[in-house]
Image (cartoon, rainbow, N blue to C red; front, side, top):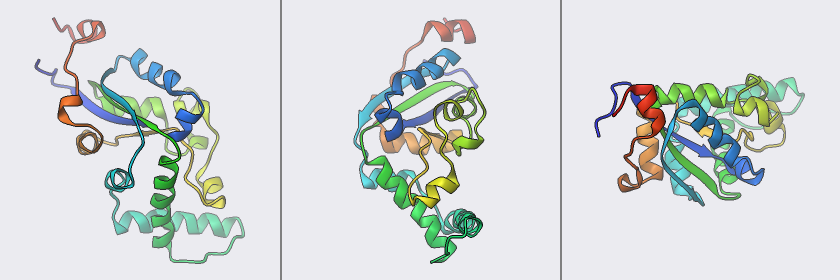
Length: 195
């Protein structure tokens, strides 16, 4: 089947807090109601290797994120005990630990501008700044500062790809090509005049 020219795929991971809080169905429902099609889905225990490959960050990213943590610690009157880059690396270390606390649900969603649509539905990375009506805005109140204070990953329920290119890289980490389904939904026929 040929894809519509604006069709994209996006990887979504329903993180351990979504699974533990029994929000999987509610979250998936929001994506489906928007018109996105599930082309792959599975529940699995993420490996450390998968997670480190998935959260593929460089020193610039670690330094930038770590600088934000240093600022938050200073604002809270807590001591700064290491270089900013190490605080940045701690973000990934805590995410890996958090993502292995229970199974996760991995999804591939497909549709017109899928990565942008998923981002809009999910909300900003920090739940306390996510708009009402988004998944993060409606279902959690965690913040970067609170997570840093408790030395843990922010509990934000969902990972979503940031771009179509990033989605394709991430999908290959979580799914084999034969696990991606190719079919047409009734919604596609209506939204895209697909026969």
